[in-house]
Image 1 (cartoon, rainbow, N blue to C red):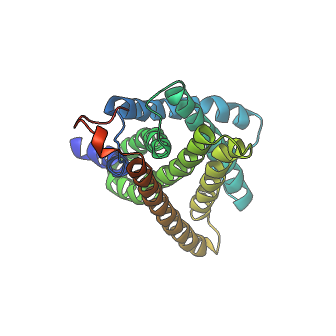
Image 2 (image 1 turned 180 degrees about the horizontal axis):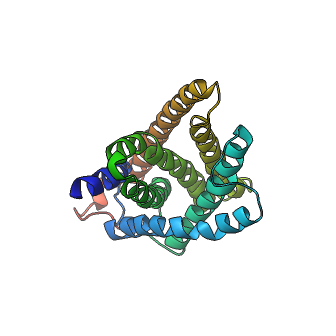
Image 3 (image 1 turned 90 degrees about the horizontal axis):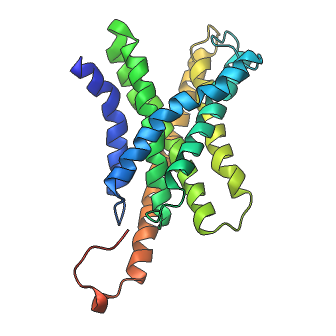
Length: 248
């Protein structure tokens, strides 16, 4: 059982450590872990949106056609899940003085997104029975990093809104872009399982999309981290440094 639990939880914790370790001024661990817990709560909050959409007939639970795969991907997953994650991110960061650097948006959004991915992954792995190893490996390389990438995009625009607030479209992009990426990702994933002739091509398209998504995520993290270090260096005054750590 411990092996199964580790296989389900470890991928999310590894990615969270990666984004956290690139922070020039690390955020309070208790707040990051709180964001992780909020992400877990978002899995339940999302059902408050997806449930009514299902009752309205906007998607079906078991898609058998490409159009049904699109509908369940966007209305059953991407739209409600990214909305729930964004709400939890707002709930976590509202009136928090710790949110004082642009890179912080990536850290906290990643904590929420990976908390969601962790609980979702845990439920999938525990319900997979004897296939737990295959499910845990496939989700470790596809599903969990996917949620991580969506969160980085959300965190980037959340920081832009918080520190700039000049582009009104950012208030739409902060949810729209992660939702679109999530919807495209899930459409490819669902379509690759449909009994259609070109399912193999869709599987290749999914792998390529994942590769581009992972590359974008890594570049965004490193770019934002480097910019954060430059900003801190510009405002660093060695004559006034008393050797104590910077306040968050």
